[in-house]
Length: 151
Image: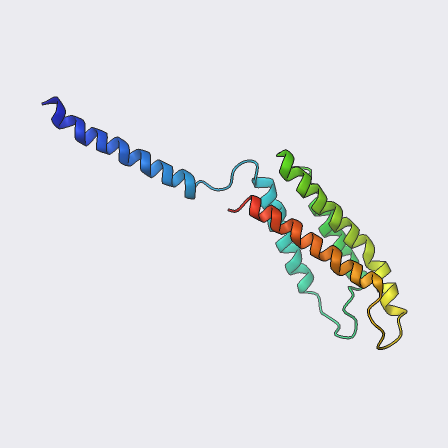
């Protein structure tokens, strides 16, 4: 008589254990170490949308002085969020991202000046190429953080 009740009980326990495992693996959300990183990624996405809402001048692709404030707020916001990352490996990446963003925001006036003083038809000044490279490094850091904390 005991063995008749043991199989359904064992099967029920196994089903509950498997269901819990699936829930934990797929539906529980990000780990505690990744929550600040996800905050960084979401903030960056929101700021990118804010930047893209600005009217673009096809004759001058460099952000205006008024837009410098948006970029500085983006860099400051990334720095603030990077300080909240507690995992050592992710913290290094987040701080590097914030430093790169700060360099980018600080470099905009110099790029604008270099572009304004170049001759028509001349190749882009080195400052522009440097900003393209810096932008790529920022994109790489964002990609690495995103890969480390896939949600």
